[in-house]
Every structure is written in C-alpha cells, then in structure tokens.
Image 1: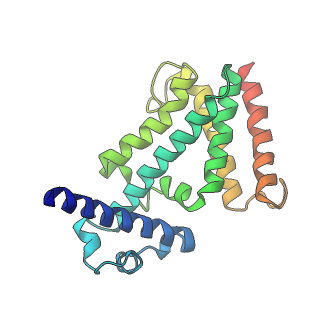
Image 2 (image 1 turned 120 degrees about the vertical axis):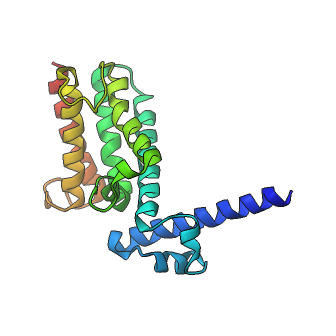
Length: 203
C-alpha cells in the first residue's frame, strides 16, 4: 500500500509541474516558462522539477506530446460525424483551426522545433507522427506523411498546409480584420477557406 501511495504521490507532483508549466505558457508565452517559476507555481522546491524532467525542454516536449494527442482527438471526433471523403477532409481542417484557436500557445509550441526538438523525445515524436498520419488513414491514402515524395500524399499535404497556414496567420494576427473581429468570426472565415479547398481537392 505504501509503494502504491508513493507512486500516486509522484504522479500528482509530476502532473502539477506540467499543469503549472501550461498555465505559465498560456499566461506569458514560451518565454515565461522557467524551471524556477514552474517550481514556484507548482508549490514544490526549486529542485523538484528536475526529479521528473531533465530540463525545460523535456517539459516542453511532454506538453507538445499532450498537445498532439489533443489535436488527434479533435480530428477524430470531427470526422466521426461525417461520411464522405470531402466532408472528412473539411471536418479535419475545421478541427485543426478550432484546436489552434482554443490552445494558441500550445499550438505554437508543437511546431517550434527551435524551442523543442521532438526528435530527441521518442514518445512525443511518436504522438506527433500519429497525429500527422491520421489524415492519411482517414482519407484512405496509401503511405505515411514522412514520405513527402509520394505523389498520392499531395492532396493530404495540401490540405494540412492550408489548415496550418490559416491557423498560424490567425494566431499571429496577419489577416487583420479580414475575417472579422471576434474569435467566432475568425474561425468561421477560416472554415470558409477550408471548405473551398476541400471542394476543389475533391474534384
């Protein structure tokens, strides 16, 4: 019983460190996250985070991996409501935009290789690859996203590029008021573009 309790306690501390890290990132961006500030926010000693994570990048990798799991779930839930290929492509794109708008700092982290190189973190990398390959599986295309030279993947890569580009432009404010001023208006505007390209790619 003691060992079980001890394990549960360690898991709670680890989860607390990750939650504190995510809060700091959401409040002040990636630059706000330091090991000392994470410890303070989590209510543990300054050395405690190092018992669970080697360094700041290891925490970022863990958060990025969780982000890819969430994005995967967003897309799976979206395509479960539709049947035809065009609608699935559109639904995944809309889910991608929705995730980015709901979790802007996490979305930025997931694709900032200079902040966190997932190639050094196999578990997080595996989660990212599972997420990237979901559209390939959903749309019934042969191959993996890693094989960028496979011509069969061109529609999938095009769809992903459109969704990712729109999400990034929205988050960085590069579209100005083109799609409206509110979050719902911006999401609706992006979804119109997603729908337009999904229709074009279906022809």
